[in-house]
Structures are given as structure tokens and as C-alpha cells.
Image 1 (cartoon, rainbow, N blue to C red):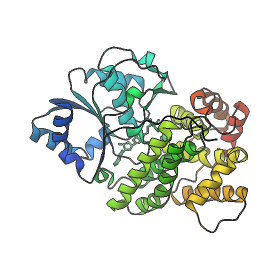
Image 2 (cartoon, protein in one colour):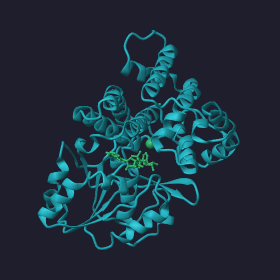
Image 3 (cartoon, rainbow, N blue to C red):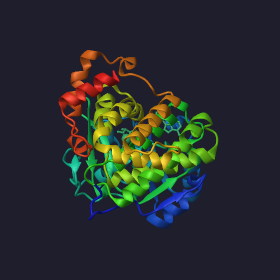
Image 4 (tube, rainbow, N blue to C red):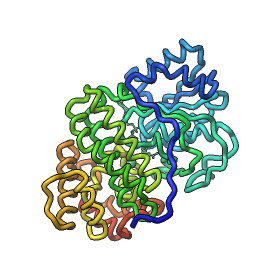
Length: 384
Ligand SMILES: NC(=O)c1ccc[n+]([C@@H]2O[C@H](COP(=O)([O-])OP(=O)(O)OC[C@H]3O[C@@H](n4cnc5c(N)ncnc54)[C@H](O)[C@@H]3O)[C@@H](O)[C@H]2O)c1
Ligand SMILES: [Fe+2]
């Protein structure tokens, strides 16, 4: 049900365009009086030379820079703390990469003020520290992290924990589609499905769904539904990349305000324990959660069907079923229709996954249908 009262927040400066990063230095000087910056990224992206135009632009403008390139997928706390040490003497922190690099950059920008420990930031609205100016430059069209106030890190051995705070909203976002050219097919598919899940879960989010998040989620799904298969088949066409990037960002704006739910709650343990990529984990669980939620979200799924598809049956339940079938087809088309057992996950591991998923109370509360331990176990069994 759409609430009568709602609030909506997003990043207030978003710049889009091919090769924008080659012009960024001047903007950094104008906006933040930047003299020294830290770029937080992963080694793979450095190797691919993705940030060369940015580094050249900084050099030419006389801006000093450091590159921290030790971010890994599902970044552990230790990496975040290590990166923060490099940020003590810089004016601006730049997240450059997928969700892992951008999430790390968010926390680094706050930790570099040395006002609060990381351990005390976990949860919702726990950050009271100020932070350094933060710029986000996504290189995947997936997490939408560039416009969310959320950072997800791995705590302890295998638990994915979130810091959620308006302090983490970036000051500037650069959407440069040239960064996505040539991204491997499987990363395009996995991150793209993650973005679609953000839109779907925001649209069915139980507590904070609102007219603005609905608008953004619908628009995101429309764009991603057409652009993602095209970007998957022809990763060198910049128009498809730009559309996917835009779709992922709109989905990010939606779920930053109407948070994600059961799919993410059950996907997180697959990343935490078995190191499956975030988007892949989502793709493996999505169809099962859609069927599970159907009894409680048929109206929303039918609305999404009418948003995407033509020549639909007239009754709501059949429309909702068409939506689920369509998403299943898309996942297949993107090469992601796989089972948990294909990833060295054993049947005996499923109870541990279900136990861990139950820890994700922040996400589970947003699911349209209540999920208890037995439900989670049954869902993992279906996915296995
Ligand atoms: N903050 C949020 O709101 C939010 C939302 C969803 C997920 N997440 C988190 O984000 C992380 C996942 O992020 P992700 O899916 O973007 O992946 P990622 O950042 O972990 O990167 C995955 C891989 O893709 C490579 N890559 C990135 N861009 C590339 C490009 N243009 N070309 C070639 N390779 C490229 C990277 O080098 C890396 O090897 C997880 O930790 C997840 O929990 C955060
Ligand atoms: Fe996600």
C-alpha cells in the first residue's frame, strides 16, 4: 500500500555523458577546491586501464592523487579500514568501480574524519561522523550504489552487514558509459539482473514504497528490460551501455527510499559464505521469491507486467504470472538460469544459508510476505 506520508532523498548532483571522466579534474577543483584526492577501486579495473583518462585529467590540472586498488568483491572490514588510512590527508574521496569499490569509498570518506569507529556504524542511522567530499563513478550498471546511502561489507567470517545513513549519499555522481564498454558478458548479465531486482523489490517494498520510488522503479524496469539484453549481446554499443547505466541508477534511487527485501536477504549468504557474485546470487534466488511472494504481491506484479508487456490476459493474477514468466525468460536469455548445486553448494549447506538469511532482519521486514526459517530453507531447496 502506498503511504500517504513519505520522504524521498537522492544525490543532488548527477552528471552523465561519454568520456566525462576525462573532464572531471576542473569540476573537482571548482566544486571541492580539490588539491589531493584518493581513488578507491579494485586491481582488475586498474589493469584494464579504465581510469587512465581520469588520472590524466588530474595530472594535467595539477591535482595530486593516490589510488587504493585493494578492494575485493563483498569487501571485508579489514580492507575498508586499510583504505581509510590512505584518506586521512586528502580533500576528496572518489569511488571508482562496482558496488564493492563505491561502498568502500563511502565508509572511507566517513572514517577518514576519525570521529567514529566502523564497528559503531553498522545498522540504520548510526553514523554521526562527518565525512570528506565523496564522488562516485560506477563502472557497472548494477548496484546503483552511486545514489544509495548504503554500504555493504563482510563482517566476521561470512556475514554481510550494512551501514545505512544519509551521511553516505555522495556529493557528486558521474555516469560515464564509456567505462562500461567491453565489460565481460557474465558481469553485464549479473549486475544487470541485480539492478532489475532493485526495481522489483522497491516496487513491492512493504514499508516505505511511495509514489516517487514507484515511478523510478517502473521506469528503471522498462529501460533495463530493453537495454540489458542488447548490452549483453553487443557490449560495445555505447547507447545500450548508457541506457543500462541510467536504468541501474534509477533503480538505485528507488530502493534507496523503498528498500530491498527477500531476494537480497536470501542472496547475501550466498555471497558471504560461498563468494558468489552479488548479481548472480540475486539471479539464482529471484524466480523462487517471485513465486513465493505472488499471493501477497499479485497486484504489484500485475502492474509491472502492464508496464513491460503487451497482449496480456485481463485478470490480475494471470498478468502477475506473465510478469514472473517474463523475468524467468530474461534470466535464461542472460545465461543465469542455474542452480545452487552448480556452485559447489551441498544440500547439507542449506540450513546454514537459511539461518544466515534470518539475520537479515533489515531486509526481511520489507518483503511483501513474511519469510520465516522454514520458508527460507524451502526457498533454498527450490533453488538448489
Ligand atoms: N550500496 C548499495 O546500495 C549496494 C546495492 C547492491 C549491492 N551492493 C554491494 O555491491 C557489491 C557488488 O558490486 P558489483 O556487482 O558492482 O560488483 P563488484 O564491484 O564486486 O565488481 C565485480 C567485478 O567486476 C569488475 N568490473 C567492474 N566494472 C567493470 C568494467 N567496466 N569492465 C570490466 N570489469 C569490471 C571488477 O573488477 C570486479 O572484478 C556487493 O558487495 C554488494 O553487496 C551494494
Ligand atoms: Fe543488489
